[in-house]
Image (cartoon, rainbow, N blue to C red; front, side, top):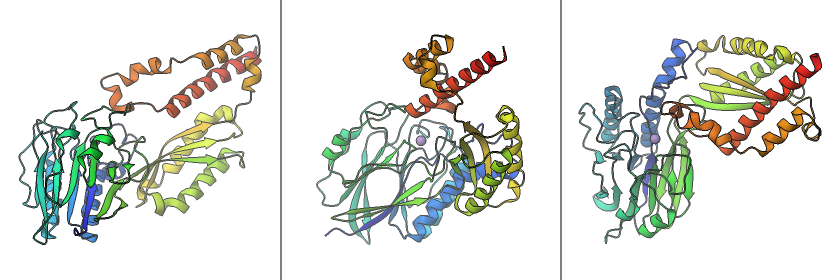
Length: 412
Ligand SMILES: [Mn+2]
């Protein structure tokens, strides 16, 4: 029987992320909380490791946000490693596309409990538990911004009868949403015969395969609204016969979209009370939080909607900087039930009908968005759009057009 191993698997720490475009309109205290959030999240990883008395911690790439690693990030990292060192906890880490080893950075010496897979070819490092050889850990680092080669074939079990764990920062070959670096297929990973695949690169948490586990823990702190919901790391209990994964949250600021059904209320004033009540009930659950509200339904005074909503956002955010668990509303979107019957309009023999038919037939949304998604700077902010987001964009544009056209028709 092999001994049970307990470890933490995290990735994509992105320490010292600049949070560009997030801080506008925020008080200095709140922006400070946001700027500190990646560090706070890292400290929570360390606390989880101590509380759960793990054998080691795996960090699979993108520890830093930029290839010019900030000195602050490196020193904070070092401090965390020293805490683990005192508790006898080892760290195995690799660098990814964001913090590749070819970047320029201040030399910082980490304590002796830290093993870095510095080479671009996969290498093997043994882990000893109570003096006994218990695992072979394999990994590699990016030496440049992009690695397109397949790395899976470089991982091989050794002849030693110990656990084999692979650290791999890369994307599944079929992924079309992200830059596909170090592509792999699950079948290739299975061929290697490892007991656990510790992945990094994709910021959304996902278990690609249960047994043997192939796992993206996601990043430890969201950086914008596309990285919403709880963020964290996995606590892994690796046994001879089964593996148990427990998600442990680490984020210190939550990004979240909240949907309100307003079919039972009629005025903006009622909406104000509704959201206020919700905030107080949920502050301890969610805060600190940057959130968006989506409203489904219709409110009286819709023609003044924009002004009304702007005022409400100000009122809701007004006292937030006094709160420990603050809830900062960044945006509010209304999906109102249209006053027209789309299908009926579409049957007509007029311009609006032509327009609706054109919208239904058009498949040009990708080329229309290309200007944004392929723009060198723009794509860093908008990334890619999911099918659902594309539908939403089309539907918003349609509502806007129909509303203007139909209203204008009436006033003539
Ligand atoms: Mn990353």
